[in-house]
Length: 120
Image (cartoon, rainbow, N blue to C red; front, side, top):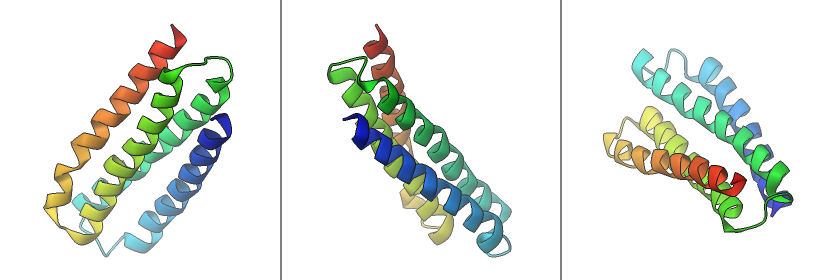
């Protein structure tokens, strides 16, 4: 599982840097300042949780159990749901995607909670 989360964290970090550059250079002037801020929030949280996935991969061998595995998958789900919905919302302007964002936020919170449980 540690390799899976290492790979997921590395891919999420790569995409986060690429989307950050795209937002700064490709979307500036195309999106309103409010929607650009929404996009940048998605990038910021993706990068935080890419690092959380790398941490999860690093400690997966030390802390066996379902909690560490759940933490990793919840971080992945959070990136897809939270950051992904913000990207789509910012680019398309379809506000319905904003309803998905809190689900991703809850996945992030649950992932951190599972990581804490694994440490105990």
